[in-house]
Length: 331
Ligand code: ASP
Image (tube, rainbow, N blue to C red):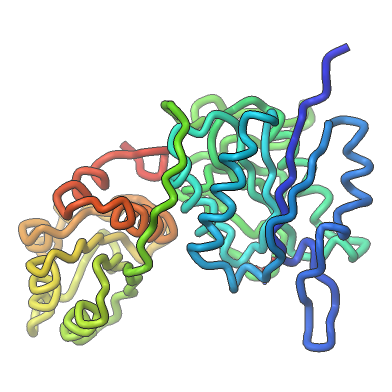
């Protein structure tokens, strides 16, 4: 008889383990998952490691580091790791872990739920089933499983505040679906992971995400520099348009001259920014601004935070953003 896959479940809080408290839903603990895990014992050898219990709105880069360390410590002992996490910031955590764990050599799968386990109609058991199946697949990488779909962690975006299909894979195909054949891998969309596995958790908090709005004052960049920010991700218009009239570009030029890495993505959820198409974008490139292409804002933010944490120079950061590390950008 084939041996059961060994899967470690790391719990970090979120709705999936929440209970109704006096002020609303609050994270309970891993005991909320007990019944489901008992059912899973028929299929998997399951381990449990509870590292903290937070609403994911309270998760910071320090918590990303704690999760990455736990994964790295445990990785030799299991076939795969599932991480339960609140949905609100799960896409940030999944992206951050993608960069903190280069060359990861086993499946690491984030999941959670929109309705607590305690609720009879919770989506939690189903999401856990998909996540465990992915964790047992043998495909290395950092993933997010939700609503019977699996996507790269660095391509996931929470697109619904309460709907069960809460996450989408943006500008990249799904890695796997649950079909009538079980978990069906999409071979064309699997990540290319090249080893050796490493733990590189140093990360900078000095990155600001700026959504461009018509008429935004260029002084915002001076204010950010004055506050110690070393990186800015600009969600620009459409293909990467930025207001260039009325001193619009001056703030960005000053920021780049001060050694701040400025990455431009688009505020459109789908498709890619391409600064070469319009004059307003070309001028930015000539100034030293970095293209974010089709990365999600979550991936662009965490990649830049990580690059600065790794003490890369602006030149090195530019080179890093020109390539895909784990599928976060379409080559
Ligand atoms: N507020 C919750 C959290 O992110 C939402 C959820 O888990 O669905 O922790």
